Length: 57
Image (cartoon, rainbow, N blue to C red):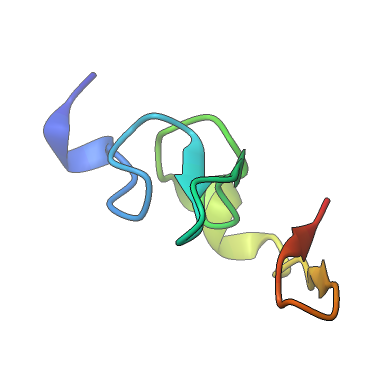
């Protein structure tokens, strides 16, 4: 993977993790690990959280 195209939020893995170690799909690149024009044109996905602020996918 070319470094310039790599998603900086997930460092190319396609996954992010919260402070408790729960992993979820990267909301910036939508899980593909690269950033491109499609990622810019997509709307942001609003995630829901539970009472402990854990993300619910």
